[in-house]
Image 1 (cartoon, helix red, strand yellow):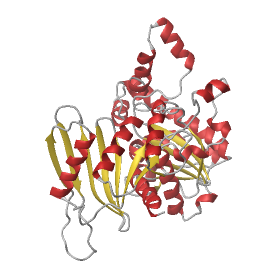
Image 2 (image 1 turned 120 degrees about the vertical axis):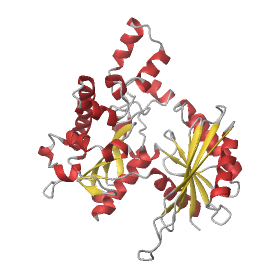
Image 3 (image 1 turned 30 degrees about the vertical axis):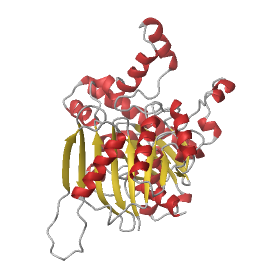
Image 4 (image 1 turned 90 degrees about the vertical axis):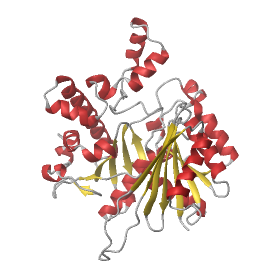
Length: 410
């Protein structure tokens, strides 16, 4: 059997997917939310199984079921999830998971590959809470609850930071007092690693070229956004740093900013550390510039001629171009540039603007291909472009399931 359950746990919610890795099918997806907030909700979607072409079976749509009830904690949340599988399917008795894979945001410098979860690993994840106080405690709560729900199968942690453990010291080291940095583990870790790994490998397969021969730049552009230089399948530079705040402009995060600006706000605007944290993480980025955190709203405002939305778009793509140029220099040129996640996959104007001016590096985008909608991986560059530009839908759950199954089988 090759059934894997993937869990992505937050502080008041968790998402899940049940995948049949042998058949390459998503059997069910779900979201348990508003945990510990009075009335919670479970949304459970069952995917129809495909049939062979020509059988004449009518198309069957996904079946989605919702239930509202008090969900006091993650333990109760997993019971609600199990009830949804029992009532609506697929049956976990008939298709029991052979392993459970967990997304864990921060593995520090300690975890560089998917790891079988043991009590010692749980202690390490808890210890790393100091580096990801909003994420690791929630990830750990999901692990503990899932182990109670599925006590007889291996549980595997897949870390967002793991793919970036190949960064060279010159890329991950901040130029601050070395002893202080070491004492407090201040360095660049990088995030979105599961997505960057999946996309870079999928691009190589799509092009029919060995991963080890390709120099790639991957833009993961969602509400959170990052870009990674991948050389021969290894992350060698990435935009996010000690936290997911560094780098590109994002939905509500500032990305790169002169630290001295924060000193000025602390001294002149009387903002404390918590105020600055909220400013940079929740009231900056596209939202801070335009009032909109969603790129679709920014694009609509830009189309209406709104100055704030136009400026937000311009700042956003200026940062993309800056990183594209820097990573072309770090790699000595690129074979592939890929765009993924919500904005990367669905905003042709962003893709075109991000690569504008990179003709010197052999990057040529085909306007018609770029504007065309489509599913799956697709080429948006011209036939004579020296760099292949792709749109690659990401699938972090599938990548977590793959890595989980490898660990479980070993």
